[in-house]
Amino acid sequence: MAAAATRRLYWDDALALGFRARVAAHTRWGERDAVVLEATAFYPEAGGQLADRGVLAGRPVVDVGLDDAGVIHHVLEGERPAVGDEVAGEVERARRRLHMALHTGQHLLSRALVEIARADTVSARLGEHGCTIDVDVATLGERALAEAEALVHAVIDDDVAVRAFFPDAEELARLPLRREPKVDADVRVIDIGGFDLSPCGGTHCTRSGQVGLVRVTGSERYKGKQRIFFDAGQRARVVTAGHDDALRALAVSFAVAAGDVPAAVERLRGEVKTASATARALKERLAEALAAGLGGERVVVTLDEAGPGTDVELLRAVAKRVVARDGAVALLAARVPGGVDVVVSRGAGSSFDCGAFVKRVAAACGGRGGGRPQHAEGRLPEGADWSALVLAHGG
Image (cartoon, rainbow, N blue to C red; front, side):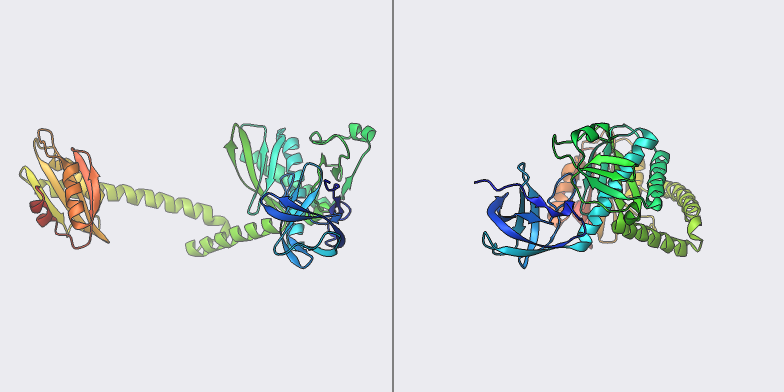
């Protein structure tokens, strides 16, 4: 016989975490053994909210699920208590308290997005490490998100009551619900001080002030809609504190006040851009000077003393100038930290296969590399004798 729908104690009081109940049945949830109780304070994963954790009959609760018949299945670590036993349960308070804040915060933010941007929530997910709301608009600017967040905090500051109730059909029809119910009977409505009324079976704070903080952490386009990332409650405080610590560290590094860090970063960005342009110009001049001193159709060179700018980019620049001469082949190497970079290139009129040559050399000395007949590159082990390798392998 199928188990009867489980009485949900968390609907009566979301902070009544300890309870006693009788085991009604042994079941399976997914691939694991589970137990069903006549009543439970454990919230199952549903409606975008994760399941509770805690202890039942002295055993850790590792998952809680809800089936279509309203039966809640508890997956335990270890042996299941017998059917008919009365057992004690205790829901993990910190996780429940966080989920209450996250879910209440999501309702607040979803309503604020409607008020500010006429953006209706089409789905929401309260995850282990972050939360998302998907809204039915293609774009949502930073200003709208900031205004929505500010409206949420105004309601939090007002510390309005959060009420859960089951209206009859007539009252339900009159309520200005933010979204339509997903069930036809026994619709549970969450009313956050008249600011937001939504059908929901989740756990929520009893006053808006308990949410504490809601922080929008980003947004992106997602399947033609906008996905908003946010956190609330204790997790939002941890995230915000982490950001503040990072900002303080940057302020100390730049020797400026925290509020001046963005300007300091912009100054540094400009200095790096100027320095990069100068380095490129100097590298081009160095490549010109090096190439000017390299003559002949076969140019075999290992750059050991060209200076701190010696790298594969310099090799490419020198090779480009060498092979500008008709029929020339450039076989260039540079000793760099951790190995030897090589660039092999040919000019018009040459039939030298650069890619095949680099592959032969790399295979012979335990390096790696390859490329096209016209141009190839690789990395050889430290200490590789480029001139000897060229002579030994047909360069």
